[in-house]
Each structure stands twice: as structure tokens, then as C-alpha cells.
Image 1 (cartoon, rainbow, N blue to C red):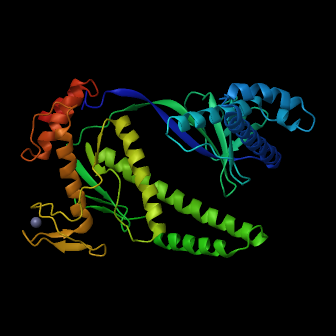
Image 2 (cartoon, rainbow, N blue to C red):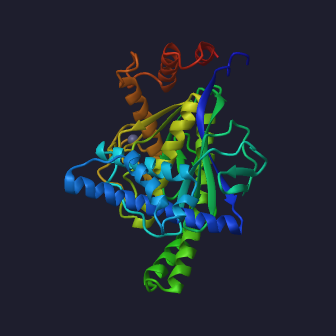
Image 3 (cartoon, protein in one colour):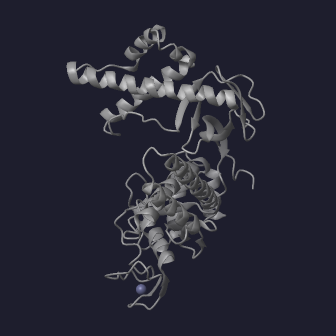
Length: 415
Ligand SMILES: [Zn+2]
């Protein structure tokens, strides 16, 4: 197997660890989150008004100069207690928010309401990169749920609190990954509501156990929250309950999605998924919203894991009728009801599982798209070539562009 898996690449990996601040730290953070929110809102108000009234575009640096003044103003001394770099970073973040807005990538920056959640970005993480402890400026040693990974100490660390009042630290670091071995296998993946995913190989990945029951519970609790009177103590209690249920569902789903995507990049060389899922319409807003989030998360994970481990991801056009087309003879039905889990092709008589058939179509369509792409020098007609031939050509192309080791490709062709 020598020379099979020998290409190493450096990638940026992000980490998120649960943190447990002590009582004093929690009280400090409470104030700091408040100060950061105040600064964000004040700066946003000033910048918006300067632009409205005088057509002036202020930058974070301008506001930053005033910040020094504000810290000396009586009544605002609390600003000076927050680590200075956190406040500067807060203004930088606002700059980025404005940049995204002007580039039409995002909406106009919004005012931050008073809520449980918040985040601060720290510069100058303590040199003692210790087991289960991280030292942050003015906060001291912060207890973590797990040991820190053995990576270089990051220059920047985010400490955040979510709606349930839990704290996390997150940061990015450079790590080395090596390409995974070539498996000669291709797959189309249909992400669904009933099962988490169906593969073109016929395999189905179920949702986490009791997942539907948890969703139902979450829905009940949300309805209950809507009935509670605004500002009441019972509402606050209910809000926390909903936030916890939400966090639970999200966590569980995240774990399942990571297991799914890791398995896909390990077992297959080429993965075809839908560009954007338009299924599940009329299925109830709730399940659909959850499903959409899951879908974009799968795509995100497959994109970076594919990049890390040298696997290829193809996104198939969103309007392709993948469920209604027979994967055996290409006959397309006029209509297929959402509750029809199985159907028989009227033309060739093949009995299809709805989701597996969709996955097979995604694979076929993905290969067709791949073969038709002009940035790859492929001279095959996807209609005639068998999937393996296309794969070998794609891999050869990757090798030519220097992305993959030649030995890997030879292995793919002759192995
Ligand atoms: Zn058919």
C-alpha cells in the first residue's frame, strides 16, 4: 500500500469545546457581553446616523477613537473593565458586517437585543495551553469539558453563550490531513425527512433514535411558549425549556450528520447530492425547516471533508425531477405523491424504493454534469460511459492538475 495514501495537506480546522466558567467568571462575562452589545448598538447607531444625515461612511477605526474617550467618561468606566481587544474585535466584526452588506452578501447589520446569548472574541490566549484549561485575558483560567487538541495555540478565541446558558470556546487551527485511499466507489445520496439519507447502493441511514419523538416534544413546547404572556416568569422558564429541547435536537442531529459525512468520504470517491432540496413541501413547516438546516449542513461538511481527504463532491441541479424518474429506463412519471414510498415503473416494470431511486438518479445526473463540465478535460459522453470510466477520468484529471498523487490514480486505473 506504499505510495497509496502519501499526500499530506494542511487545512484549517475549527474546534468548539464546552466551557465551564465559575461563578465569578460568569458574573464578569455577563457584564462583558452587555458591554459588547452596548458598543455594537452604539456604534451601529452612530454609523447609521452619520450616513443618513451627512452621507459619511465611518469605519470601526473612527469609532475606536471615540471608544477611548468613552472609557474616560464618567458613568462609562465599566467599558474599561472589558479586555480592550474584545471591544476592538467587536468593532472589526461590525466592519465586516457592513462590508458584507455593501457587497450584497448580507442584510443591513442589526441591533442586538437583550438576550441570554452573546459572544466575545479574545486575542492573546494564555501560553499555558493546558489540559482542559485555557487562560483568557482578564478572565483567568477557564475550565473546559475536554482537553485542548494538540495543535498550535490560536491567536484568536471566541467565547460564547447560547440560549440555554451554556458556554463554548471556539477557535481555528492548522492541522495536517492525509488523503484517504481510493475505493473505486461512487454514490448518489438522497437526503430525506423519513430517513436521514438513502444511498444509490440501496442502503438507508435512519434518523437518530427517538428523533421524531424529540421533534414532536420540541413542537409542543414551542406552542406552549407562544401562549405564555410576554415578560412573565413562566414565559422565561418555558423559553429555557424550548432552548434546551432545541439544543438537544441540534446536537443529536449534528452527531448523526458528522457520522454520515465521514462515512461517505471514507467509503466513496465521488458523492452526488442535490444542490438544494425542494422536496418535503407541504410536510409541515417545522420538519421542513429542520430538514433544510440539515441539508445545508451535510453539504458544508461534505465540501470540507472532501477537500481534506481528496474526495469529489458533485451538486446536482435543484430542478432535476429525481424522485419521479425511473432510474432503470428514464421514464418520468407525471406525478408522484409524497406518501408513496414505493412505486412500479409503468414502462419497464421495475419496483422502486422512492428514496433509493432518487439517489440513483442523482448519481447518474451528477456523472452527466461532471462529464459535461468544461473545466475538466473529459472526452466521454456520460450517456455511454460506465460510471467507473468517468471516475477514472476525473481522477486522472485531478492528478494532472496536481491535486492528487499520480500513484493514487494509477492505483485507481490498474488497481
Ligand atoms: Zn422504468
